[in-house]
Image (tube, rainbow, N blue to C red; front, side, top):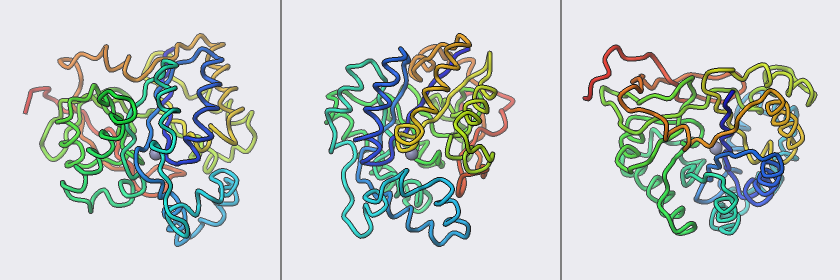
Length: 306
Ligand SMILES: [Zn+2]
């Protein structure tokens, strides 16, 4: 069994507090992983406040203990208090990840702007988000980024087209079941897409009624596929903080089953463009997650170039 842990870092606190803990845990367990960091400002407070309009939000806040999970400073970031930087506040943490052998990629620039406004940004707005993210990555690491993960698993025709021109080894923008090439509005992209295949822990905690760590661990260990692609997205804000021990138990359970942990760029390296299926990128709604996500749709009959 092969497992790729994809760690999304959306906030200042997630990078400053969650990532070092996750890196220490994974290093101690001898596990490799891929970190995707939002390179711009932390406006997560805006998203959390906006969600107050949502019926059922208060009960979800309570159920997931959002204040302790995100921290009050995060909830205020970009609202009552100015947004804090994410990557640029902790450049050394990013360089340490690379030095420790983890893969580092770009999780957009302004996570909240991308997730909430992708379809309103237009080509130039999306270009700016992508370019700014790639630029900060280069400034911090000294090398060009090779991978991108769309904030909130949201992609559209413009974002995929712009990313396709960046010479990336792959992107991980959608939910799905196997690597593929994205087809959207009749255009077929050349950059491989490696989708997230498992539900995230915050989705599972919100919908499956799994309240104990043991129940969550048991749920996950039954989800991983023996032979197929396993890409499990982790949030530095969740597994890196209140759910660190739960993640540790999942990692140990997987190791006992003989799982091999790989970085997403290792999977990308093995892909053969000629054999990669072309699939439509569609939109769906997932249990436990607000709004739409991009998902791997139907496979195209022909694999010809456009
Ligand atoms: Zn994210």
